[in-house]
Amino acid sequence: MNVRITVRLKPGVLDPQGRAVHHALGGLGFEGVEDVRIGRVIEMEVADGTDDETLRSMCERLLANTVIEDYQIETSAKVDAR
Image 1 (cartoon, rainbow, N blue to C red):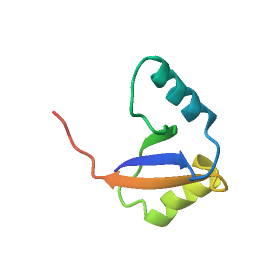
Image 2: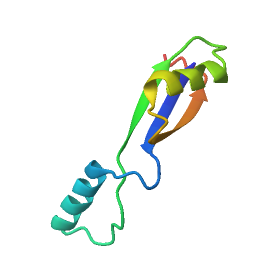
Image 3: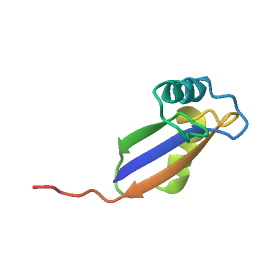
Image 4: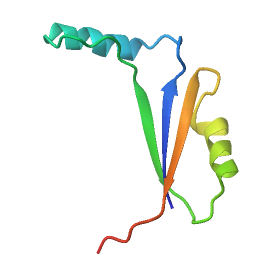
């Protein structure tokens, strides 16, 4: 099973990388960008049948700092591309 976990800073948490990208976009002439938030995507392949609680535990114990970050888990079945 394929798993994609998106981790983002919680609203209200300072995002210095996002501010730097926002400033750089303005400097390059891109108008209308009101805010930029930087996050990360973690893609994993796990055994079929891995339950949601196990995935949440992975996030809360290692993959996300739940004090300052939120996470979203998306799962999909493996696709055999031949």
